[in-house]
Image 1: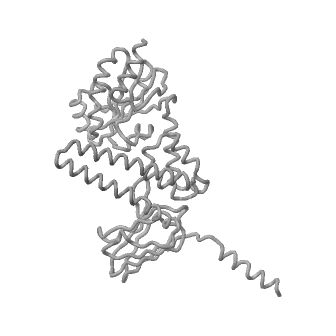
Image 2 (image 1 turned 90 degrees about the vertical axis):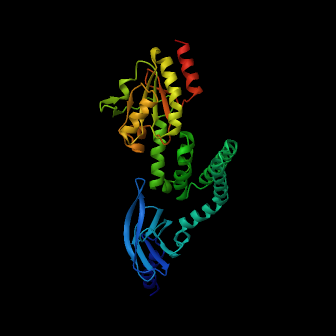
Amino acid sequence: MKRTILLITLPLIVFACSKQTQYDISGNIKNMNKVPVTLQKTQDGEWSTVDSAQVEFGEFSFQGKLKHPQMMRLVVGQNQGKIKFFAENADISIKAKKDSLSSAQVKGSQVHRKYKDFQGQLKDFNHKLEKARQAYQKAHKKEDEKAMEQAGKRYRKISEDRRAFVKEYVGKNGDSYLAPYLTRKYLMTFLKYKQLDSLYSNFTPKVKKTKYARSLKERRDVLKRTQIGKEYIDFTLPDTSGQAVSLSDHVGDGYVLLDFWAAWCGPCRKENPNLVDAYQKYHDQGFEIVGVSLDKSKKAWVNAIHQDNITWPQVSDLQYWDNKASNKYGIVSIPSNFLINKEGKIVDKNLRGEKLEEKLKEIYASQ
């Protein structure tokens, strides 16, 4: 008899201890009725709709499955507001007031709870950043260059301190699903290969399976392929006349500076006179520049070429940040450049102003 009871209860125990395999989101928005609500997630950098429902007398619900916890959001009505939260396969409750959706209470997601705790730790940094931003705007309005410089310096220092805090947090929480998300959000564009590799290597196997970690791995692999000493990566793009031009058409005869820029990029335009000087000074000795524009408008691109007196080869697919060549080289900010020798090896990168002049002087003084 005892054996029979044990056999009957065993499946119940197994069922009770099994991990939940789907999310069940129950929402309540006070004093709201007959309003559409959509559940969205990020897909290739854009928000895409996962499911849709309608708020009926304040209530709505969603069910579904996630491979891994991820950031999602609820879009309520026509521009009535959004609620962002970390979702996972769990019973999640969301309570909000229609006039203050951004301060909704989210319960049931352990990952979201940790995310809210982390956001609380960033409040002091964010408050200081906002004060520095306001000080800069005030100084700019008064055309007070000294105050602008001080506010800008303060803003950059606080930003660096915040990144250092996030980096330390990620380093200590490699077993958290938050780690790759926070790395992408706050650190990715600032990390060099070794730094990113170190953080990624610290993620546990379960965390490495998330889409956030996979994107970091892709970024790490690109940075690895474009390290100094690596072979250049070839590409083919149209020039201003539509003629296909490959980087390999110019590599092999001398040093080539692969320069990523855009007409809309202020720092790029400010740097162009330095490139013009370098080109005029060293082109006859074998120095070449290949410019890759991250523009969307051909007219703006061509006008900038003429205005800045650019005479070296220029290519672009006019795809903005989706530029084929910039993706291959992992470009996340411009201006950026790579110096390639005649053997096709990357020998230096991000040379601007005096640094470029010093490098070229060093190269051509010995020839």
